[in-house]
Image (tube, rainbow, N blue to C red):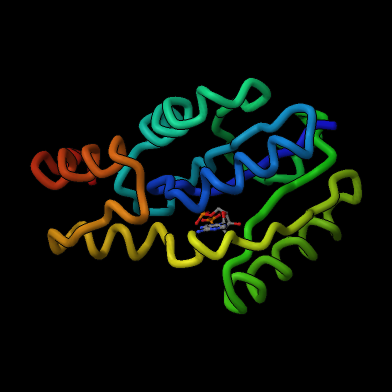
Length: 163
Ligand code: ADP
């Protein structure tokens, strides 16, 4: 069975990598899909986020990384994925995720959404907080891999020209 793990991954955290590792054991093929949403201001471009994820998932043989735009249910149909994987850290994730999965269910019944509880050691890993802390020069090494830490330092020193 093919599964999709969609998200913004701006940036990818240890929490995301943990979900990828665990989900890759359940499905035959896991597509990590970076949402290309022009309306969302991001630190990293879609291609940068895809590259980060590819670098950080090389050890998983059945994991592919790509990007998509538009509706997730359409992308799921296109790829033949029957499972949409999302992570849950707390009740605010739950409220949002259930709303999204219901909307997706109404649009298409072909793919089933499954939720994976965050591992306790990564509960606090949160992309928004990583950006906020990094923006103030704080330590983010507990939440993101070295590669991301370095990319964020580079971004602070060389702000993106179009953002
Ligand atoms: P989105 O913008 O779609 O919420 P994110 O990149 O923030 O994308 O998250 C992608 C998915 O990963 C979501 O289901 C989110 O709840 C989950 N997630 C984020 N951080 C963690 C974590 N530390 N542990 C487990 N799941 C997580």
